[in-house]
Length: 82
Image (cartoon, rainbow, N blue to C red; front, side, top):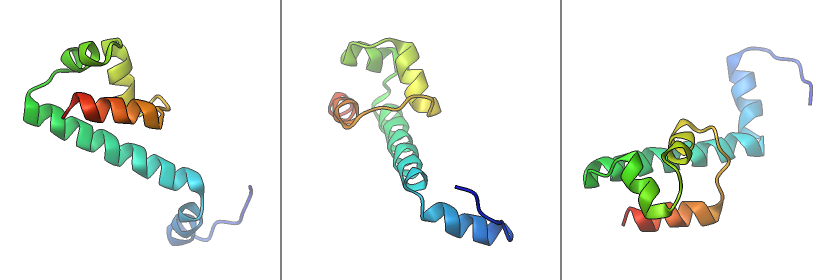
């Protein structure tokens, strides 16, 4: 979708109207809380990966925001960190 840009405020207002903006916000919030809980419990990426039955590289991808995880994986992570 092309549009004329009239500055940062207009761009930001346009972005807020896009679903992808909100989806990325949810991913960022989840990964920030995930890291905070890992720190609070002194759980490493390797430890979390073992709890979930996945590779440590997958955990790294989640934390970097370079994977599109599902609600199922979010629930699994939350339960593993509970």
